[in-house]
Length: 226
Image 1 (tube, rainbow, N blue to C red):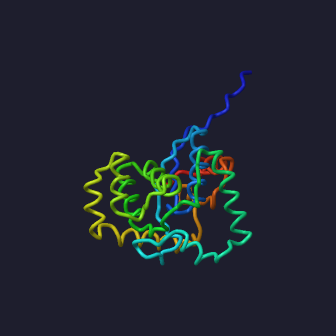
Image 2: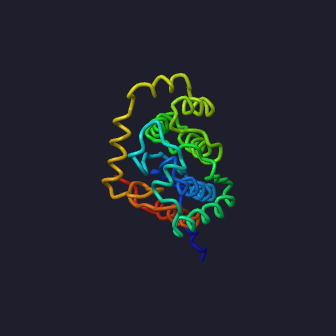
Image 3: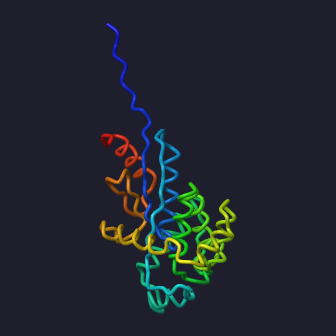
């Protein structure tokens, strides 16, 4: 008697919302881990980047980075802060990141960067924009709170930099982005990165690829919505 062939699972389309902030080093590290996992699966992953501001009290022109960190952590960073930084600097090269914290000039307000990310999502350039913004801030030390810098970054990834500059000079989508931030805070998200799978469960923090591979399989096994 012939054996029945086992039914193979068909590739699923999985939506992941990545809630993050451009100035969050864990977000860049976590995103690299996530995309490393996404490349290892047969399933089709679609990503939407969602806004979050670690510190919405930073004034819009930004503040000098060293002054900001001194005000936040004091003259001598705590042992916890040092351990966190050492972990980031050790883990980053394994996924091709180069954190150079000491030379960051400005701690920006990131609202305009999130507005730009929203427009990039709409042009299916969200992943490219997120990578460009993270690299600009942490590696190239560009001021991602400066509208002129943001317009140039947009141009570099294939968007219309001149149009972006015009939109940033207005209030285009400002309220929509702030409302979206509040929506995710009201969901209980009080730290980033947060990866929301199929709108049903989340992976919190900069988890390594194995955790995301497990999450992808879990998401693929969920019953399809009616």
